[in-house]
Figure 1 (cartoon, rainbow, N blue to C red):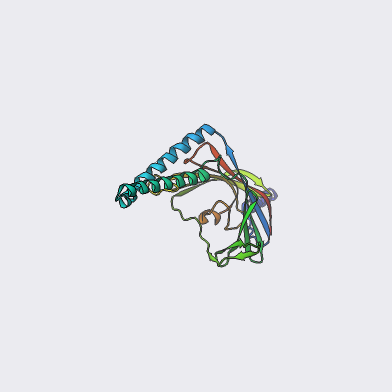
Figure 2 (figure 1 turned 135 degrees about the vertical axis):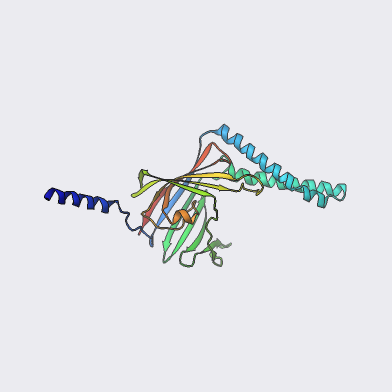
Length: 262
């Protein structure tokens, strides 16, 4: 009888310990992230970048036919139309290079969320230059903060905060793959998103993959990278490796550098 009682007690304790604790909803403190870029295969970067850029430029040329027809009433008009198309393609090249080629991306990006009297001060720092905004969870708004010529902080009018709106995504959990990050128990989650190619809606979708370690011990609906509310309502990512089939051979790594939440 005594042996049975001990076994039952152990089973009850094991059951209780396996139940997730009530997640922390932060009201004070801060959390800080940093992003680094790791190039794993430079040749693959260059080849896939060129392939994707050529596809976008070809689409740009095809979509510019109507522009040329509209302007090209005379030879002079045709030349002006061609110049406009070339300018458009140069803008596309520049934007695509800065956002999609790891050798030309911003290298040092840091993000933080600081909790202050019911609102959150969100700051993104790129190469030492910072931009901030105020997030209001109760009203679901965002207020941009600007500096005037005298370095005074000016607030914009609050606007509605929007999460990433996408329907084509998949979440796979690997709860047996765990690690502890800054004192929080985490497990592995892989998020895959299919979305339109940047700068063009007429080309096939691209796949973005986020290999994450997430915790259920924090309940917080804002993140510097993961803007899917469907993810943030389940758990909070503390470490992410982001890859895309648009340009392969590199990865963006997001990690928590400091966390102190109450």
